Image 1: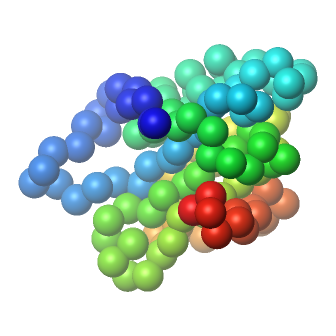
Image 2 (image 1 turned 30 degrees about the horizontal axis):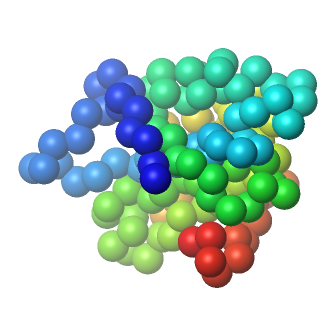
Length: 129
């Protein structure tokens, strides 16, 4: 079951406004835990929620890719054919910053994925989608 986090200031969603680009951050059995060493998990989540609508999810079922972040396209980009982008092994502050910058630029379907993030992209198994 997903836990909702408050959206970042200035990114509140109203029913009259189209849904913005958002991210889902996995936090459960592996992601966001001491099993993934050398990562300040709380800081990573805090950084992302500073300006991006974030949903924290329980296990997404792809633990071998911990920490997992899914970048969801805006409603307009999704209507134009954009699909969520799954990023795995997001375990350093630079990757977190690259994700934040991409979402600020519009995310999937609206802005090109930064080349460096191609290193993190993976296709989840069908059951995890």
